[in-house]
Amino acid sequence: MSLISLAVTLIVIGVLLWLVNTYIPMDGKIKKILNIVVVICVVVWLLFAFGILDRSSEIRVPQLK
Image 1: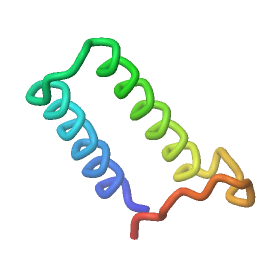
Image 2 (image 1 turned 120 degrees about the vertical axis):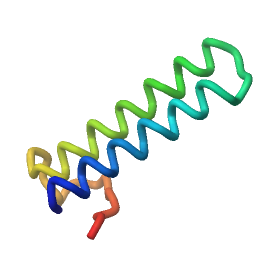
Image 3 (image 1 turned 90 degrees about the horizontal axis):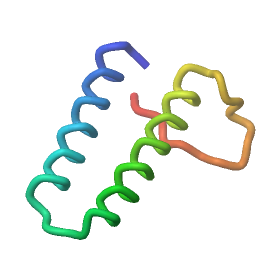
């Protein structure tokens, strides 16, 4: 995975999360939970992308090519 595709993916995820937080009305607690879930998923995906976590585990993360 190239560094450019990684940066573009992170920017798209950030913009989508910002749009959801800004324009979709929901309770503050739900927004906080949504933000935490998205951040955890992105961190786990990055750990897999950089090879820090082993690919032979049970969690399957789609590869961007």
